[in-house]
Length: 315
Image (cartoon, rainbow, N blue to C red; front, side, top):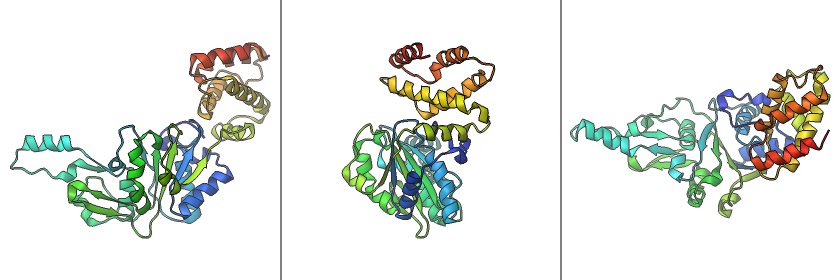
């Protein structure tokens, strides 16, 4: 459970997945249902998909596309954006430059997006060559797709993708409504994240598996820290335990934005570089190091005042 770094940089072995979440992933995959994840920012909703890809590939012995396909939802997103983008402006400009007598192929301006690419990868056909510019593998593949922060999209977005996300198909309007359909023997595992900024339609929710990632307690936080910082020595366990107690108490007193696991990990990395865990560092020095590096943990002035007051009244 960490921050939104790129999938390329994330090692799925560092992800600490509890049994309930693992069962949710496996059940949604087996039932061909999208998995909707909620939880406060920084609890690992986004990077779960990298772990899920590795886990599903090992458990079910099937071939997946090498990395998750990610769609970052925007407030202006439409249902079509999830499947492909057509750059009409560039197409118009290219046609204008080359002249009306020199036809510019529409395929050069159609690019598959996350779910559209997953569908095409599951059923690669020769005719795709004339439809869009995205290169498709010759061997059918399963895919993991992340639709991140789906609650940012307009309400019509989730209603408009109900058929496509259940049947895994879409049409390309600019190519005579050509239908691209998922391969019969392949699976597409869709993970959608939501920060619960607004309610999603009931019809949409009925078609999803749902899992809420609670903020981890001290025991799981310890597991997460050790997974990300395996170089920490055993003799630092007592200091780490105290620091995690302090972190949880600081979370309790922050009135606005409570620090997440991602910010905790950054703080611990920094404190380690500053000598916080050295045997020669005394209690007062550790207290100062924690106070001086709060900018990596606390992100609003109101929260900073509350935490500084807490530090000043706790030995």
